[in-house]
Length: 315
Image (cartoon, rainbow, N blue to C red):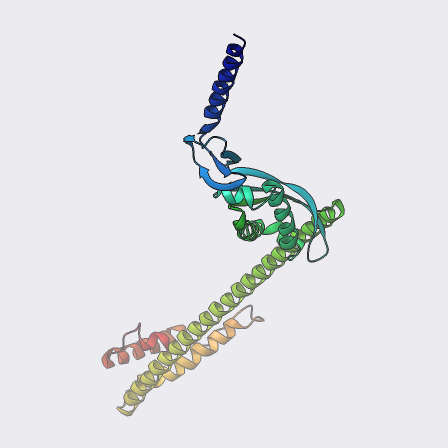
């Protein structure tokens, strides 16, 4: 009668132990994670999301690894550039575990390792360039950091997808000096633009003066050409008139002699009229005789075929 309670207790313990073993043997891995399985402390395989069964008392869960992309806020630090300027750099990195076993067993603290690795490479990359290049070429710095950190973290089963410099803050004195430099550069560009404008205006003004002088010279040239042509035509008309008068005289026409007399008379009268001291002109010759002489000459020219609007008008 005393052995029955002991046996019952023993059976109960065995059943409880079996239930606990079965419960520990059944594992459900959630989405976005992978678990490593260890057999007597040694890695054997990796469990993916879903339902899995382990060998009781032999296999156990080793590490639970998050396989989703993770944001790593890199600690802020002061960095010295190549031109000995100190800046405070803040950065952020994005990484994703691609091999759970390597991330679990190749490095003790993955996030700490990535943080220190990123800080070291930030000092190296920014320290190799000048301050102006560091402030203006963040894309280049990000690309270099991504390449170096991703390559260094490959043995840990990690893929670094992005590294971004959040902020580069130089000291206050350097910021003020940069502000003064920027102001001086802007004033310099403004002075250069103003000088270029004045230069262009002077060039355009000189070109306008030159164009005006060229056109004026061309006008004088054209006027001189026309004057020479007029004088040439007048000389031709006078030569022809003289020839016709001389021919008439040779043929015995007495009125032709009056042509030369009338010509000299008209020239003398024109000079007297053009004199500034002449107030009154005395004509000592009969005007009717002059008119008659000119009429006789006109008849000669009509006979010779010279019109009054042609050579005689110019003579």
